[in-house]
Each structure stands twice: as C-alpha cells, then as structure tokens.
Length: 272
View: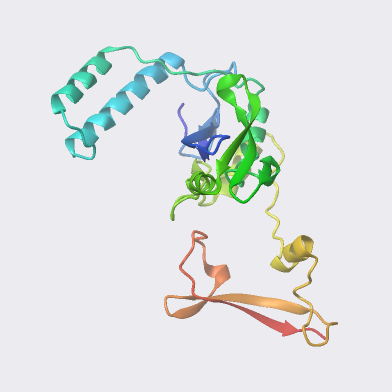
C-alpha cells in the first residue's frame, strides 16, 4: 500500500440465539498515510477489494502456520500426539488455502450502518423477549442456517442467564479498537489532515454534553438545582478523583481506561 491504513475493529461475541460466537469485524481504509503525513491513494481503483485475493491467500496461510508452529514450540498448545500434529501441519502447508473475499453487498455505507447498530448493545435487547414466566423465558431470534427465518426459543432462567453472561466482557476487554492512523494519540489532527488533502469537509468537533444535561434528558430530574432553596443552580467547578492516595483533577487524566477509583468528589458552588 505504501502507507498506514486506518482500522476500526469491532468485537462481537454472540449469535441471535445467544450462543457463544466470538468474531471480529474490521473496517479498513482503502488508502493510508505515509511517514510524512501525506495521503496514499488505494492501489486498486475499482473500489471492490483492498488487496488481491491470491496475495491474501498466501499471506494468511504463512501467518497462520508460522504462529501455530510458534505456539507448538513454546508449548502454549496442548496435544496428545506430537507426530500427528506435525503431519497435519505438513499436509496443510502443501495445500492451497482459500480466502473468502466478497465485495459488500450494499456498499460501505450499509456495512458501517450494520456494525453501528451493535457497538453499544448487549447480547439481547428487550424487544426480542416475548414472554417471561416463573421458569422460562421466550425470545425471538433469526435462524441464519434456515433461510434467515424468524423463530422463537424458550429457555429456563438458568440457561438464559448462562448464555447471557458469556457475553459480559472480562476486565481489560473492549468492544472497539482503533489502529493505524486512527489510533488515539492525536487522532483528530490526522483525520483533519486527511480531510484537507482529500478536499472533504472538516471533521465535526467533539461535543461535550454535561452530566447534568444528560441526567435531565434521561430522567427529567435537574441535579444542578439547589437542594435547599430549590431556585438557584449549582455550577460544577471540577471533579476530583481519589487515586493512589491523593485527589487529582479528573480533567488531567488522559487515559479513559480507568484508574481504580474509590470515590468521586464533585465540587460545587451555589449561584445567586
């Protein structure tokens, strides 16, 4: 390519029936940025594929087998018959591998819209749950193996919870990762540079919505209202977080990943 692409990776862990089906969707830009910050146009101008399929087959095969052999060598993989595993690798290495690569059926916009619906959703939304009684939960799901037919599945409470909790991510896991020229450090500057070079509208500025406004929109409760006089409004001065034995200004924390916090303190002053 001659440049670094922008990559958005989205983790999905479930199928429609709440089965454990971890997989990753990646959105990769056609072009990329070189070391000088200049935009490098995609090499394949037909807009259908980023890389030639035959090249991807060879690269994927080599990468997969190389890392599989590495895991075997450092004993990260456990097996009972080493000779059988080596024979399997030998046979697989001599075969031609295939890569399933289709152009998106509805175009890039449809792909982004599809993935966008799931980035901040849980394994099942309330509108698919049809009935709950003392023992069972029934919900609607789409059976992709049977012509995308809509069906109803009924599970006991314990089994429903077992399936649901499989999709609660462990500590340290996130659903969305950004890489390439979209990695977090000074990302907006690079995006603005790309838009300028491609003569696109500049990116929208990030809008900060105060917590008091979000609470008002969601619950109808004005948390900035003075609890004493019920007329004046309190103004947020700063938020302090207790971290590593001292109070620090939350605005100075660049890593949103999360320091462990014991307690948050919001400092207010009353307006007249």
